[in-house]
Length: 283
Image 1 (cartoon, rainbow, N blue to C red):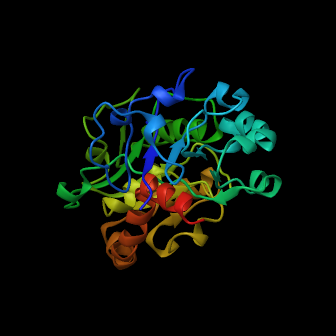
Image 2 (cartoon, rainbow, N blue to C red):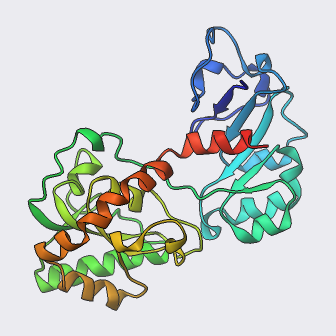
């Protein structure tokens, strides 16, 4: 079976990709034996390397390795638009371009539809998910995108109204593990950074893994991927406010069966590196 390697976030291949150590790569489908002392040049033409976008990668004449190289564009157009524009011609460098962006897929011959997903709650299985609190909102201090601004607007409204919502995250109440802001809560206000078709992230996945009902603002076609009976879909700030005001323990118990049933789907999308590896092997 071909080997599939994943270049970790923040790592760069450098001027001579062939010399990059295999020990520094992730192996989503299993690590091959005997990696010590080997580098990318030792992979064969049947093997694969998956990488995330980097500014200079579009201008390479090639990678100088026998393995097939694919690129995974996970971010929405407002973040990775520059890479999407360059990939209209630099796609030739890659075996496959994995993306959920429909416009990019329509412009290149080697695109493969790939919704990102992911999880930042790796220890969710061992967490105590007993529901003792009503609602959380996790927010960073970022303010550049529409979703960032909406989160901060919700925080201000929650604090002004004195609602039963714990605001957590950088800039507010820090926590050691993300599950601390999800596992004890019946509901969580889950706001993606942007609203874009097919784009959903660990923000949604982590709530579902923790058996927490997402009050969800984000992917407009999320119904294509999940049973929305397991969440409360909101398209406006006002709908988020109404959902928060209508929270109750009884409402949570009504949603719980759909929430439990959504776990398998959430697990599937959480394993994004494995899915990416399977996508490049799919032919």
